[in-house]
Length: 154
Image (cartoon, rainbow, N blue to C red; front, side, top):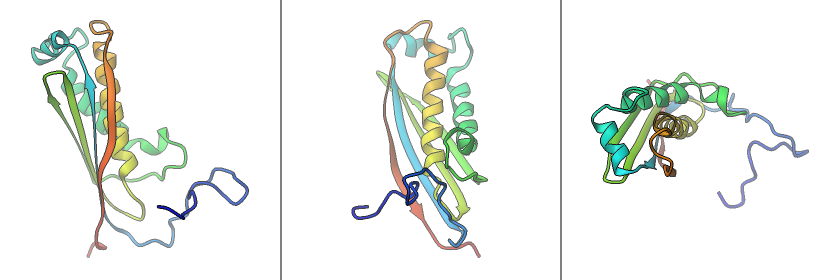
């Protein structure tokens, strides 16, 4: 990335959407991860499906998928993409929940924002559903783990 300018900044410093019209359509995938730290008591309530707002893991999974599919409506300058695959997995750990999202597409532009947005929305949904019982929650470590660009579809 060193030596490259910011692609979303025009010559006069204005924000702009990147022109991808000349780029070829290729298979692309992105994988993101994050986690939310929760009290053991909160994790026990989630595991036994006793959070008052409902099934936390199922709701967070759906929220992540919905957010990833709606990324261009949430993040200015993101291209609207028809995501072909968006998987969100949540795993209970000793001190929190690990969240991972995998997004895939055949497109002219990457799908990393969709994966990152899916992880973020899933974490925020867990926060919202558990805020009445856990005041020390912490969302951390949302990162892009992998980004690939393959061949053009045949």
